[in-house]
Each structure stands twice: as structure tokens, then as C-alpha cells.
Image 1 (cartoon, rainbow, N blue to C red):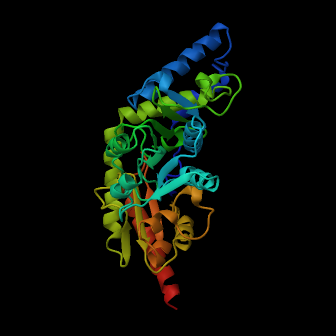
Image 2 (cartoon, rainbow, N blue to C red; image 1 turned 120 degrees about the vertical axis):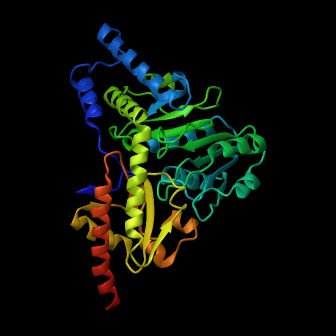
Image 3 (cartoon, helix red, strand yellow; image 1 turned 180 degrees about the vertical axis):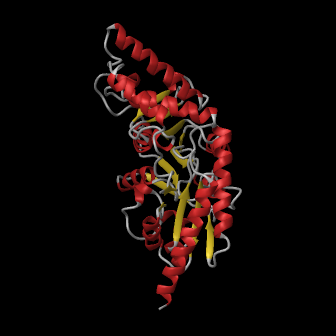
Amino acid sequence: MIYFDNSATTPVCPEAANTALRYMTEQFYNPAAAYSPAVSVERDVNAARARLASYLNAEQSELIFTSGGTESNNIALSGTLAMRRDKCRIITSAVEHPSVFEPFAALKAQGYDVVVVGVDKTGCVRMDELSAALTESTGYVSIMHVNNEVGAVNDINSIYNLVREKSPSAVFHCDGVQAYIKMPAVQCDMYSFSGHKLNAPKGIGGLYVRRGTRFKGGQTGGGQENNLRSGTTNVPSIMALDVSAKLWTDNRTERLENMTRVKHRLYNNLSRIKDIKLNGPEINDSVPYILNISFLGVRGEVLLHSLMDKGLLVSTGSACAARNRGKNRILTAMGITGDRQDGAIRFSFGAGNTEAEADAAAQMIEDSLSLLRRFRRR
């Protein structure tokens, strides 16, 4: 089986799995307890928090542990707006993950002044539209770091500077789920990330909140996470994330170079096939681990199932939007419609993928297309 859907989730690495097991069965103590084994676990969690924050050039006290990217994105927005009395202007882009886009849509129905800025043909935010949308009354801006479907990279530092210039009191949030550790740290007021994109377990993530940012936690109870997100600390997953993140940091250059080779090998192999289109940035301008290609003359979902039968796992887009039938919102925003949108497939690569897998995958795709296009012509 060849797994080319690492943007949906990644396999937990053995080191992280073993760490989680140890904190489930041996060092299982609640860090809020007063006895010495629990205090030792609390020290471990604090050390992990400090390391995970350091990858964002942040302090330990600025990192809140969450259940993942969706929760981080949601509480960033709700926690910011809870500190305001007015229904201010809030801004996002047309290609955000559903965990950002859908809460904005709900707030629009509640009377907030919601502005959705467009993107160019590569999937990057149009800076002119964003600049025009920013006003003194803007309270919150959320723009993703790396697009999860086409691999476009927004210039977050430039966006941050623009927000500071045009809307000094606005909070700038960045969804970094597809970028954390893999991409250089950026300037922002809030940053979301998720462990299961980094070979850690599902159900653990984080939200960086810059010191001094007006933010109100929404989950009350025992006062964990500086009273911003109460609930028993998920020690096994936190410690597993700490291990997987360090492995990523220590091996980042080698892993990204390998992913680049795999991506280019697959793309070069597929380029010999008739009627394909690259979606998003040029091959050298997107992240090394995401490749989106349209295969004209077939439906992406049909091709996906054909490839699955051959042993290749890919996707037609975001896993979080996979059950929503109809048009692909991200590709539509980029101006990709019709047969090209219908035939889009996302390939996303992980640390363990190889060039040999890229060769095998390309042959599977060519074989499937030959059959499916022949049937369609009849």
C-alpha cells in the first residue's frame, strides 16, 4: 500500500507511540495532583510545552494545548471576540480550512461584518484585496500559512505587517496546521497547529497566543492551561507530540529534501500523461509535501477509488470537507472549474515516502486513466 495522503493525517512514529504508552501505563499520573510522581509529570509537560513553543519563537506561557487544529482555530476566534463588546469587522480568505471558514459564516449570520478576501490563481491571498478590507474597526484577521489542498504558501510576515499598519488593534491569527515546524516561524498574534500532521497522535494540538493579546478562554473548570482551557491534561499525547516534533526538527532538512524529490519524481512521471493540469503554484513554489493535479476526462472520485483498488491512497481535497458533495470551494476560488475541478487529485507526502513509490504510483495512475478514459469515450 502506498500512502500519499499525509495532509489528511500521518502515521504515528514508533518513538511517539512508545512515549505515549509509557505515560499511559507507567507515568500515568495527573499533573494537577500534589504527590511527587505527579509533580514529576507536571515538570515533563512544562518542559515539552517550552520546547514546542520555542519552535514558534514563543515562550512557554504563550502556548495552550488543545485537541487539535479545529479547536485551536475555533477558540482563537471565539476567545478574541469574547473580549469585544461590538460586532466588529472580521476578515478571512476564500480558501481557508473549514474550521476557520465555517465559524466566520456562522458569525456573519449573527450580524458580524465578515469580509472574505480572494486569492490569485496559485491560491495565495490577494494583498490588494486584504489591504482594502482592513479598517480601523477590524477586530480579527485569520489567514492560513500553507494551503492544505494545493500547497500555496502565504507571506505571513508581510500580511502581519499590513494588518499592524492598517488595523493596529486587530488580532492576527494564522492557521499553521500544514506548516508548523516544516516552515520557518512567522510573526502573528495567534498560531494554530495539530500533532497528527507531524506523526504524533490525533487529538493533540496547540494555540500560540502572544503575550498581551486580549483573549478569553471558553472552557471553564479546573483552571488548566492558565485557566484558558480547563480539562485534565492529555499527558500521553503531549509527550508524544514533543518527541515527534523534536524528530521533525532534528531531521527537517533531510525530510523536506526527500519529499521534494518524491514530489518532483511523481510530477515528472505524470507529465508524460496527456491532459493533466497542475493546480496551485508552480512545482518549485509550493511546499515540498503537497501536489494537486487535475486529470481531464475523468472524475477525481472515480479515479481515487480505482487507485485505491490498486493500492494507492490519495484524496480529492481536504479530509475535513470530503463528505461535503458539490463544488470544491478552494479550487473555485482559484478560478478552477468544470472538468478541471472534477478531475483534481491531491497527493501529499510524508517522511517515509520514497521515489520508488512515486514511480509505482505514476504507473498505477497511468493504468487507471487508460481504462477510465476509454470507458468515458464510449
